[in-house]
Image 1 (cartoon, rainbow, N blue to C red):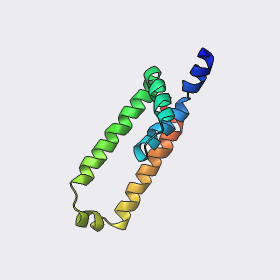
Image 2: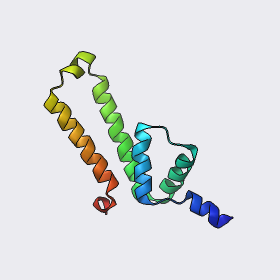
Image 3: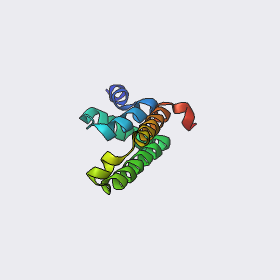
Image 4: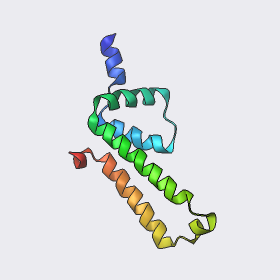
Length: 101
């Protein structure tokens, strides 16, 4: 029984990073939340990654909350592409655990 519970709760750092990122975009299931919470309590690297992602999200939200709808629409196509590229690069870096070692 104990082994089954451990197997149910234990996830890799790669899966934890994926859940951390997905949790910014969608609500995690109960099982995913439990798995992530269990992993983060045991793994300082993933805990730091989670805090960094949460801080970045807050900064991003604070910055763009100040912009009016017309200002958002006025962003050049180039600026939008730069933002999309940086978000994509950050997501790819988060998915590559070798970068954090």
